[in-house]
Image 1 (cartoon, rainbow, N blue to C red):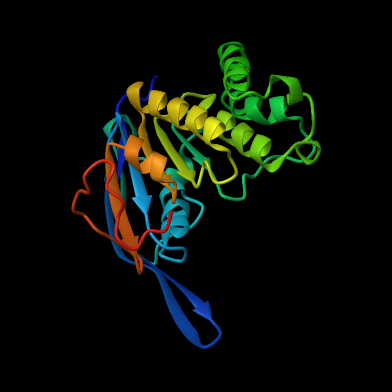
Image 2 (cartoon, rainbow, N blue to C red; image 1 turned 120 degrees about the vertical axis):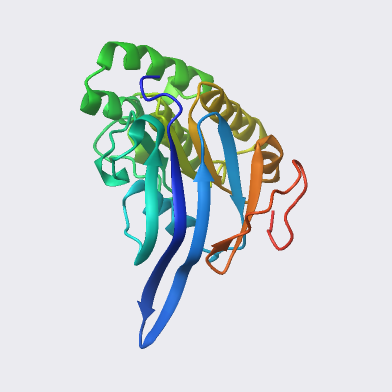
Length: 235
């Protein structure tokens, strides 16, 4: 991994959306530190701000106030400037390109970053590990939602990102496939990546190095013991 143990530090992030005449705070002073080599899971009720946080961290959205700093070898860069090999996202919407096969979707980051031979090998390994080899030539609409989600995770992993963000990456999986996804995500952290999962999945919490609670746009900075289910976080 060329990017090394890079990370991200967020301080006092505020993001407010208008709902008619009302202002609704999605982030209300969120603080977070991500470092290479660990998996951090954020648990919290729907609407607590998890997806907004990931959108700000990856540069898809911009906070109204607060600071967002890339660390390590990514220092001095803004998330929106980073390549897929530096920061990769698995969005809840999955974001697969409808006109590309699952295999071509998985390899798309490699074609954008230019390291195609190595990524092709990695891509085929990921497709096999996630049970997608038999449907790799199909278009997204020809596959199940679970297969599409696994392809979205493979796409995020194929370029060996320094930072990996994933929004409910096991939401459409049975237990066997969810375990396979979590094993690959954990292996990415062991390679030195900083990993953040927004998830309701108890198994993901148990596999994480840290589990944080999010509610009303804020993150509980206190650690939660591994395997303990955070209060107010539905499974």
